[in-house]
Length: 370
Image (cartoon, rainbow, N blue to C red):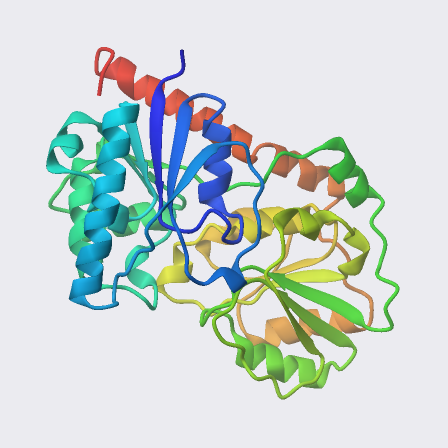
């Protein structure tokens, strides 16, 4: 019989498919996983992620919406979470964000083995709440295992909570890519250039303030035959002066891989800040499957991709890359077979197996328990 795991997820299940959904599905192969996720009022930015995993919505999180509303939401979700714990009786509680930790009763925090999956620096987001730091400190303290998606995140937590001596329970668990089917790889091998009269450059992911819109706008005005396509959920649109840009909104994850010929190149044009410096970008893993040139801002966490993608440090370097792209001279940096070999070592399936082995190892070290 599989060990039971309750998976508390801070984003809607139908949010753009990322680490929380992928890991839940893959961990369900090793554990009996039941997901409780925070339902979102903003349905227009969502897709529909079809998965067979057992999942139920919670009341929307109302952090920052006023003390009374936040109190009501906390009370409702505390009842939902602790009732589920009582009925399901999981050994592990997987927590994707500190705000989910507050819903667990003090008794259950002590009785259950908590796992904090720290996928981002939660204190670096624009919607950061003062209470998050206190909640994260308590969560890090009470967790049996803390997983971090990047080395910079590990360093950040160690520095932020140096009074807790957390070295022995913090582990690096990077992001990855979905399973690589033969048909998907075949599409990549046979990928052709788009038949468009212009060059189609794609950004795929959440559209937020960390994108360097001004730099993109400047280069798009200079290289008129490059058309930027922005695919992903957004709260507001940057108003480009250039006309060669299109917002597409959120798309189902599977739709992104239906037609490889629409992509001529893909880009991750981030502005560097404390949040980004801790990111191990899911999109870079996924971009590589298309067998097209991939362009990214350079920072320490993406150095491991440098054999496969074009990195830039400043405007001049990105300008030179755009120049090559504009004249059709920019090719995939690596042979496709090498990129696939890299990706095969970094699937979500591999990550789930690594997590399972880690938890088994921790249990063994502690004589069969946490």
